[in-house]
Image (cartoon, rainbow, N blue to C red; front, side, top):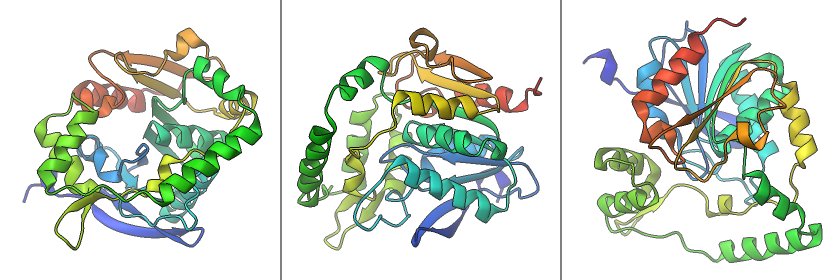
Length: 296
């Protein structure tokens, strides 16, 4: 069997008594590259990127708590600090003094927070649309009083407690749903993401692995000045990537690139929110060039 088609090995580690899963693509002697997926996603969504970079890097991709093959959080609380703790535990478990990170959406937000809290542990960071909602949406969210946010969270959590995970008759049906979310996906991509993203039920149907409670946003949020303070502490090079056809705003135009000490923003054409799926070759080229460029 050729090395290029050998898949990753599965491993587990503990964080807050949760058994969390990650896949390891080998090449232990190379620098560590951690790939962090987005919300309601899983570690194997990085497989194409991991295969492209595994010869130069020791590639590791975790399933965030409540996602993939990681445990669901008791009580169903999923906050950015919880995820940051999990990444800190993973990096320590790997024995890596410093890691490079490529992350998407929720994972991007987690990676940026981690790098702001522990700047000495991150060598380079690529965040695909990890800055959160555009400023105009954040402004509207800030106008909601805290008691209303807590009430909304209570109402949402109660509804989710009674929500039955959707069941699909077959892998093909679940993959079709995947393609409804992202029209850029090829049938082969959708099937791969689905195979690793669903679990088989006793009746033979399939349901998504992620915990329904990950849909709820906690009522307490980092204010813009706190987030800015974290971003200002990041001292490694940062590449901010977005899709031209995504909802995410341009960080150069909205000013959110300013707090970073050494950041560059790139907009990828013909791509939506999942740039690493929509334009894989271009994305891998951007990442490889960014990771290999010497620090000034």
